[in-house]
Image (cartoon, rainbow, N blue to C red; front, side):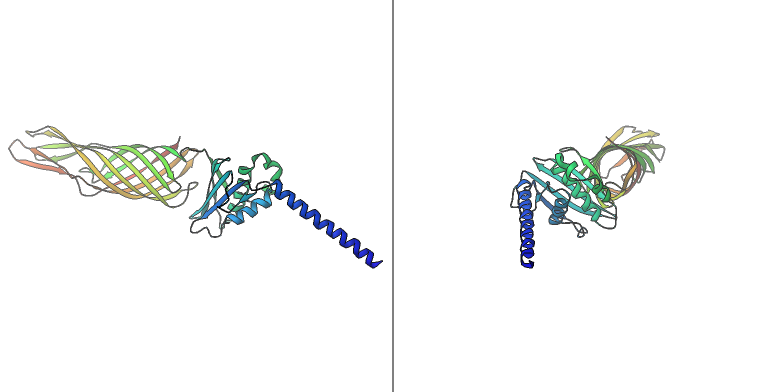
Length: 331
C-alpha cells in the first residue's frame, strides 16, 4: 500500500516536471530574443545594472520582450544604453535602431541607481513590444516601482534648440566699462556638450584726448562651446566654455582734430570661462556666464590735433572680461 502511494507520488512529480519543461520550451519557442542589448556604464555608475542584469529585469517584467546580450548575435533591433552620472543624478541615454527605432533619455535624482534600472526595464519593454505592453506589464507592477524621469526625443532631430537673449557688462574691451547685448541660437551637440552661435553689440564709448575725442564702437559674432562638469539636462548645470569671437572695431575723430575720418579694423579674440545654466519655467531657462578674453589683434587709433601733434588716444587692451546673464526659450 505504501509502495503504491509512493509510485503515484513519483508519477505526479514526473508529470509536473514534464509540464514545466514543456511550458519553458514552449515559451522559449514563442518568445525568441527580440533585440540585441548593449549597455555601457561610465565612471560612477558601477551600481547600475549591466546588460545581463537589465535582461533579467526585463524578462521578469515582460517575458515577451526577450533580449540578447551577446554582441555576436545579430537581431532585427539593436539597442544601445549608456549610463552616466553627474552630481546628484543618474542618466541613461537609450538609442534603438533597426526594426524598432527611437531615442529616449532617463534621469533619476537619487542616492542609488536601482530606480533608474527599474525604469529602464519598463521603458525597454514598451519599446521592444508596444503591442503587448498592457498585458505584459501590469499597472500594479508599475505603481510599485519608483520610476525615473523620462524624456522622449524624436529621431534625427536636435536634442535641444534655444533662442538666447542676454546682456551684461564689458570691461576693458573699449576704453571704459560699457553695457552690451547679445542674441544667439543654442543647441545640444552631445549629452555633455552645448554649442551656441550668435552676435553681440557693445554700447558706444568715447575717449578724450587733447583738443578732441574719439568715438569707439565694437560689434562681433561668436561661437560658444561648453562642456558640462556638474549637473544635468533636467537640472541646473555648470559648464566650462570656450568662445572665439570675430568682429569689427571702429573709431572716429571728434572735436578739435585736423583728421576726423572714421576707421574700422578687424577684431579677433579668444575667450574662456564658466557658465551656469538651468530651467526656469516651462520652456524658459536662465544662464549666467563670466568670460575672460584676450584680443588676438591689437589696434590703435591715431589722431592729428590742430597744433600738428599726433596722439594715440586708444589701443586695444591686452585682456578683457564680459559678465552676462539672460534667458533662453526652447523652440
